[in-house]
Amino acid sequence: MANQAAWFHEKGGPFTVGEAPMPQPAANEIIIRSHAIAFNPADAVVWKTGLFVTEWPAVVGCDVAGIVAAVGEEMGDDFKIGDRVLAAPNWSAKDRINKGSGQLYCAAVRGLIAILPDTVSFTDGCVLPAAMATAASMLYQKGNLELALPKLDVTSNGNSSMLLVWAGSSSVGSCAVQLAVAAGFEVATTCSSHNFEYCRDLGATFVFDHASPTVVDDIVAALRGKPFAGAFDAVMYPESIIKSAQIAHKLDGKKQVATVLPPMAASHVPAGLPENVIISFCYSTTISEDEVGPAIFGWLTEALAKGLIRCKPDPVIIGQGLESVQAAVERMEKGVSAAKLVVELP
Image: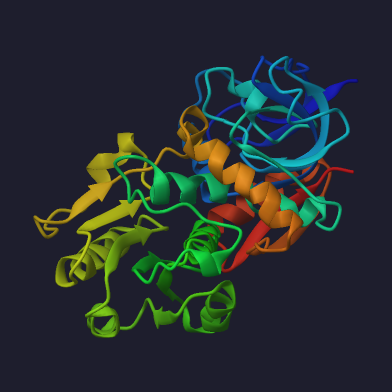
């Protein structure tokens, strides 16, 4: 086996495809031969700014679907060589060269891996893992919303509380909506008007136009009188944090907004928020270090097998081969709507 990666050598510099070290699995890791990789806004930020890069050249990517090529000594009960999997490689780890998914072989750690059934393609499966990990951090980790976990039998949960998901058509928002619905929550979400049906299809009860000048009052009017489980901001724009906080302030229930901002970006929280509303932060890959990662990715394995979760947003294939990483990251920097950019690696 030989490995190759799409390397970038400086902030915003071009990607070049070349040889890469073959990763070896730690005890709690597997090695994946990548067959499809997806791209997120974080990848464009890392490429453009060098955020988290500690040595050059570097590799981006935190979404992969492929086949298990090697198994760490503690992983044999759960995975075997030849299994089809999806995973969220921890590209911000100290040994990130082995973890970025922008290469033919990458390492993934326990708690960020799920089995991919034969009924789901690699191209579809790779849209889920990083967004699922991010949503799980915000919904379930201590200090965030700490909601009830999803179940395979939603009707048994009996949870009538309302969750606000700002930006339900985003990649993270799409996972958050589905996770919350699978735990029996009702979901109110925002998106562009052309994505209303998309969000309803994911299970949202209420959908609002994020650009409406009355969106805060409209959401408060619709949700008033219902138990409120908190707000989830999936896009981390100052305006989305402000409006989510205003809504949480005006409703009876949890006065908290969980954001996709990492803790080191706390200075980006806008000033002037209601004093009684807590703003909490996300660091998605840490779910592998507590009970949340194994619980959610274990659930995901079963939910995919039973067809209980959809691989959304839909993949948009940018190209085949690592040479297409450049185009994918550049396109990601411009933004997408209800779509996930994917490069296939046959």
